[in-house]
Length: 146
Image (cartoon, rainbow, N blue to C red; front, side):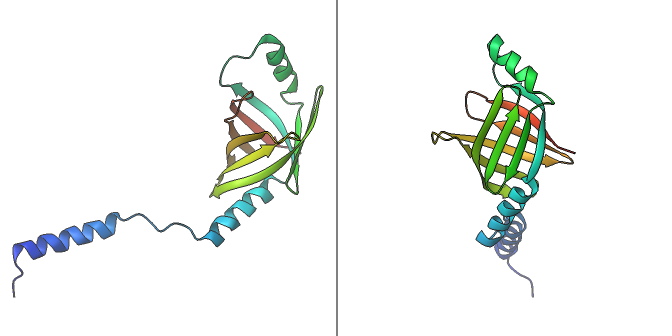
C-alpha cells in the first residue's frame, strides 16, 4: 500500500525534527556535580602567568600588574580564594556558579560584598580565565603551582 505524498512529507518532517532536536538539558544533579568538580579542580595553589587587560591600564596599575606576573600566587580552598603577591594580600569568597565539561563560571566576593564575575576553562595545567568585572576586566592564565 502506497502512502499519500503528504503523509511521506509529514513523516520526513517529523524525522527531521527529531534528528535536529536539541539534546536534553542536564539534570540539576548533573549540573551540581559539574560545579562541585570544577571547584575541586581549582583547589590548591596557582600562579598568575598572564593577564591582558581589556583596556590599557594607567601606568601605576600596569607596573603593579607587571610585578605580579609569575609572582602572584592564588590559593583556592573550601570556597575561599587567597591572593598573595608583590604588595598584594587579599582574600575573597569563591563560588562556582555554572559548569560543564572543562568550562565554568565563578563569582569572587570581596569583604565589602562587591561581586566579580569570572569565566574560565581548564587547559592542561592551566586555567584560562576572562574577568568580566571592572577594574580588572581582561583575559589571563593561572598555572598550577608545583
